[in-house]
Length: 225
Ligand code: DC
Image 1 (cartoon, rainbow, N blue to C red):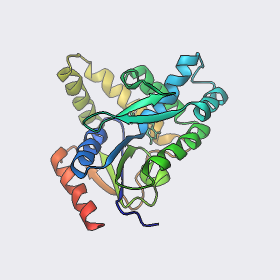
Image 2 (cartoon, rainbow, N blue to C red):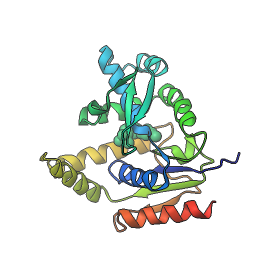
Image 3 (cartoon, helix red, strand yellow):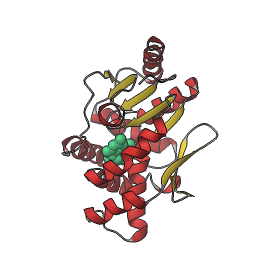
Image 4 (cartoon, helix red, strand yellow):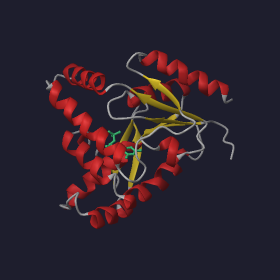
C-alpha cells in the first residue's frame, strides 16, 4: 500500500530520547505524534482505577478490550492520553505506572487490543509513532524505521538531569536499576520483544545528540518521497 505521506516508526528502550526526537520530528514535518507507550500506561491506569491487580491477566486483558483509549493534541502537538473520554495524561508518568505498563504490555491480549488503535492512528500516514514494536509489529511496512539506542548509564544520567530540570531530585543508582530492569523485561518477553526491525536504521544517541538524530531522520523522509 502506498500512502501519500510516510509513517515514521521510532523504537528503542526506555529513556533513549524517543519522545523528544519524535516530538521535534512531528513539529518540523507537521505530522501527528503518537506515543504508544501511553496506551499501555492507560491500560495499567484503567486497571488501577478498578482495583484490578496487574497480575490478573484475564481481567487486565478484558479491560484492554473495553477501555476507550485515545489522544487529544496539546497546542504544541504533544499527545495527551484520554481514558474513557477523560484526560489522564498527568497521572501516567509515575514509576509505579511505568512498572504497571511494562507488566501489562507482556500480555498478548493487551497487545492485540492496542494494535488496532495504533494502526488506526497511523493508517493515513503523516505520522510519527514511538514505541517498542512499531517497526516490527504495528507498521512493518513503515516507510521510515529508526531504532534508537544509548547505554543504560547515559539514559539514567539524562533522566536524572531531566528530573533535576523539573525541580525533582532523583538517585542515579536507583534510576539506573529501574532502567535496567525495564530493559530486561521489555526485551525478554515472549511477545513482541524490544528489538530492531531488520530494515531499521539503528542510531546510537549516546554519541549523536538530538539535532543530529533529527537531521538523519529528515534525510530518510526526503529519500522516500
Ligand atoms: O514508552 P513508555 O516508557 O511510555 O512505555 C511504557 C511501557 O509500555 C514499556 O515498559 C514498554 C511498553 N510498550 C510496549 O511494550 N510497546 C510499545 N509500542 C510501547 C510501550
